[in-house]
Length: 71
Image (cartoon, rainbow, N blue to C red; front, side):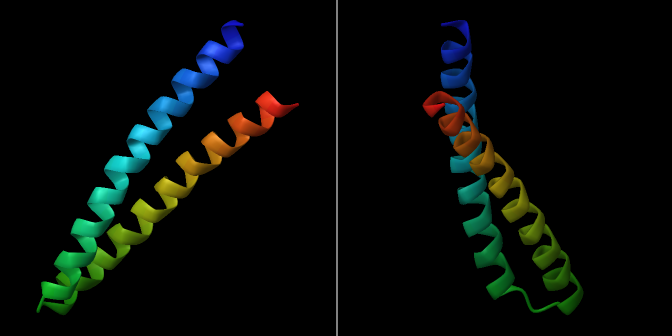
């Protein structure tokens, strides 16, 4: 039972992180489009890649948690 409660809390936390990352990803994409400076644009593209990787990590946590509950 404790594992299920912890799993729910981890999923809720991961979902909150994903939602925030999604907002930051959209903001970063919009800023890239508006950016005239190539150096700043490249820096933001690097940031965008990091944000997407971090989002994928949280999505994996939720997926792994769901798989553990099914087992």
